[in-house]
Image 1: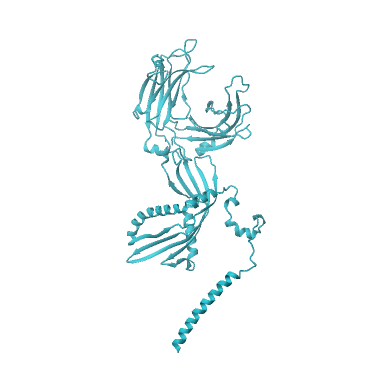
Image 2: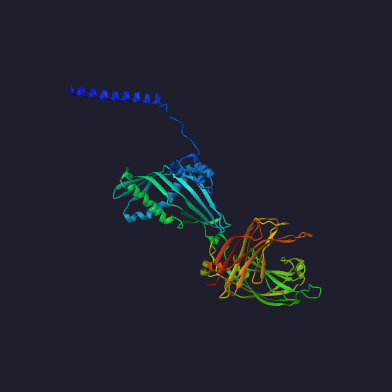
Length: 539
């Protein structure tokens, strides 16, 4: 009887449980509560302070900060691409980890370490907003608000001494605000040489961890300890101003860098032709490197002389000796009107032997086409001394130009002085009363230099560089930079007008070696100009 009673009791219990589940299901379906209300949706401005404080972490950055832009398009793109990004990223992680694991496991007597499962899950990260910073340097700075509440599954199996252990990471959450800097910007794809990543705040990291199938995070105190340790370690490595640097390309190869100095001495000219009505000429020589935007260098003018002697020396920074040429032109100076060209020629740098001084006697030509019949007429000759000196490896390293760095002055710079470099980058919001064809003119220690004219442009870009070799530092000097507009239209009452000016003190340039600022132009309503100044010394 005892056995029969036990069996009947078991079946009665099973039957009762079944009936109870069926009744509970129907009561849940047919007896829904009637007092459920729709959620209360109100503007943020009507919320009380406690509610706002609770909601604040969940509000996107573009709502809280007006200088952050929405990134709905990027989130949509990542969402669509995530299944493919997941596989590509996981494959790349395995390829990177494999050689590292192969090197490390023999040190710890481990037989193998392998990913049994590696997936980032189906939930992509979202970008809550992005802020872009404008600077005067060759760089692009972005700040991203990143949130990722993902469901990755990373299962790693470790075998050692005949035993197997597993570790599994689940339910990862990462909230971070990284600053991404692309610098320097270069004219070679992908148009930047390296990526710098910094964290503006300590990141929030949360995840589940199973060891041997058991939830390790349920151990008292371990969860908070792991979280704080990860935050501190990541912050020590990457919290701004520290950064993770990823080299994309060699910046010295991305753009043409200085590889040497060309020393040129203009000695004399001979048998020049008469250009003036009085039976003489007033010659001077212009020297310019091909493939360069820098202005030509000029000798002095020799009045009424058909066999002038100058013995004037010039230095040029060379970036590509295989393709660059030295362009030589002799002009007859005119007090009124355009200066007349007397003859031209070129020196190919690839024909020069490094560190060997050569004396060249060149015929002055009408055109550079040797077969042109016009070149049969004699126009005189010019004598030059040229010597190309390549940089040594140490000099090459010191002349690699990156954002914020200043090159050394070339050889021959006065020992107590240096080279003042003025780079006129661009201007904005220029406005002339009668025309806007801007060019920049500046005065320094009695010398005047000017840029080319950009026609019909209120936001011109020049990118022109000018050099002054000085015997002493310009600590107490100022340089006046003035923007003009000129017009060549005949009969115009105002052929030239000033668009504004600025006086820049050079004391900061000597102290800091370099300044790159945007200045508001005096006597201009909204005009601004960006000028970079460098003080280069030989030491």
